[in-house]
Image 1: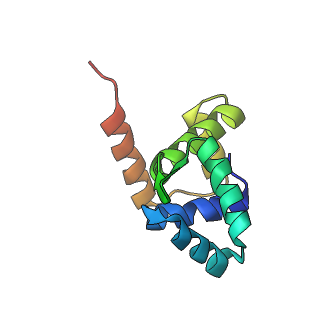
Image 2 (image 1 turned 60 degrees about the vertical axis):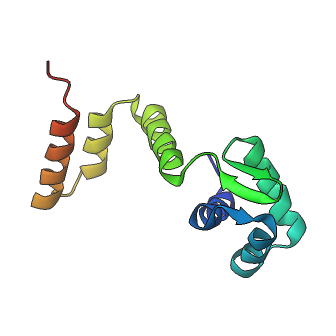
Length: 117
């Protein structure tokens, strides 16, 4: 899991990749107030974790934002709800009524992912 500031950094990369590392330094200075050394330190850390690649001064995403968020969601449900999606949804919707649109969207998701023979 990324720290909040690493998440902001990763979102900058995902929004602009592929991009030159020098351009990333400028983006981080403008949006995060970072110096060049901080940008390269965090970039190296996230490259070591397999999220990004800095090859010849071009920064690219190895893992897409969608894939990362999917992994995080799966991990969250596994750690907090024993991997049970129904338990997660029950907790998430406790104390509030789902709108007709939400019910319809959930039913469509269930129907699309049903394992009926």
